[in-house]
Image 1 (cartoon, rainbow, N blue to C red):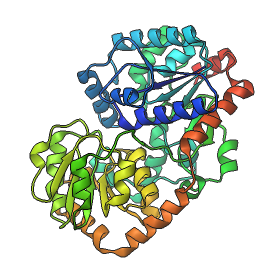
Image 2: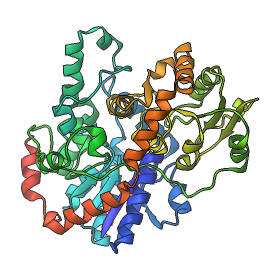
Image 3: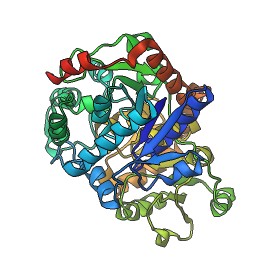
Amino acid sequence: MIVLVPHCGFLSETSRMIAIARALAARGIQTSVASHGGPYAHLLDEAGIAWTALEPTMTEAEHRAFLDALLSIGVDDRPFYEDAFMRRAIRAEADHFREVGAKLAVIGFNLTTYFSTRVAGIPLAASHGGSFLPPVLERGLCPLPVNPSKPEMARLPKFVQRWLVHNAPYLLKGPTRHLNRIAEELGVPKLASFMAMMCADLTLVTEIPEVLGIPRDEMAAWRPRSRKLWPSTRMRYVGPLYAKLDRPVPEHVERFLGEPGKVVLVAPTSVSASFLRTLVPAVRAAGARVLVAATIHDVGDLTADGVVVADVLPNHLVMPRVAAAVIMGGQGSVQTAMASGTPFVGMPYHGEQELNVALAERKGMAIRISPKLAGESDMTAAVRRLLEEPSFREDAARMRELYAGTDGAAGAADAIIDFVGAGRESPLHERSATAATA
C-alpha cells in the first residue's frame, strides 16, 4: 500500500499525485490518496480518484498563509502552519498510514508528512523539490537570481551571489524552525535546513539528464555529505511530471484559439488577482491576443477585445496551440511549455523557480525576468521578442523533441516500486537516530 498525500493548495502538486496514483494502479499497486483539502481538491474528484479527507481541513486562510510562508522564505520566514494544526494533522496522517498498512508515503509539499511518516515508521518520497536539489547545488548549476529574496543581494559581487545561491539553502533554518518545534515534541527527526525540506528518503527528480546536466548514474550514486540532510536521502531521475488535467478546452477558448492572430497564454499560478490585473495589459501591449488562465481568481473584468479569460485550463492541450506563454517559474508550468514546444517568459519567485526557468533559458526557449516587472515595459519587450525572433520557437521545438516519449508518472511509479521492493520499508529507528543529531 502506497499513500499519496497531495497539498491541494497547489495545482501542480495535486496533479502530480493524481498522475503517480494512476501509474501505480496501472502496475497493480494498491494506493490510498489522502489530503487536508484545498482549492484544487476537486481535481481528485474530476479524475475519479477516491480520497480520504484528513482532519483538520485547511481553510482558505490557512492555504493563503502557507503560500505566504513559501514566498517569504529568506525574508521574514513566516510559519507554514499553526502549531495546533500541525499536531492534529500529524496525528491524523500517522493514524491513516497505520490503518491502511502503508509501506511508503508520497507527498507534494504536504510538510506535516515529514513527521507523520516518522511517527508511523515508514519512509517518505517527495517530488516537490523538482530539480532544486543537493546534487545540483553541489555542482554549481543554479543561476544568479533575477528576483533575489533581498534586493541588496543584487549589489554584491557575482562570485558572492553565486556562493549564496548554492549555500544559503543549507544555511536557512527559518523555514523549518517552527516545524522542528513540533518534531521535538514528538521525538522524531528534525529538518535541519531548508534544503532538507526539498528532499526525502526517496527524492523523485522530475527532470531528464539532458536538461539538468547531471548523468543518470551520478544522480543514482549520489549520497548526502552534509549533516543538514537526512542521511537516508536518495535521488532517482523519473522525468518531467506536469499537469494533464481531465477536462476539455472550454468552448469560448476553442473559438478564441481558432480565430486569426497570435495568442499568448498568460497562466501564472499561485498569484493574486491584482497581479493578473497588472500583468495582462503589459502582455497585451506586445500586440498579441491574450488568453488568461485565471485558475481560482474572479478576473472576468479583464475580458476585452483580444483578451479572453478562463479558469483552470488543461494547459497541456492549450500550450501547443499558442505562440508564447507567460508563467511564473513552477516546474509544472515550465515543463508544460517545454513539452509543448512553446517559448515563454518566466517570472521566478524564489531559487527553485529561478532554476526551472533557467533550464529552459539555457535551451534558448525562455526569457527570465523578475515578477516585479510584470506590469512594466520590460514584460512587453520580452513577449514581443518571443513573438518576433524565430530562434525561440525553433529552440522550443528542439526541447519538445527531447521530452518526447518521456513519462514522469511512470518513472515515479517505477522508482517507488523499486525503493519499497529493495526493503526500504523497514523501520527507520537507526536512520532517525542519526538524523536527529544533524
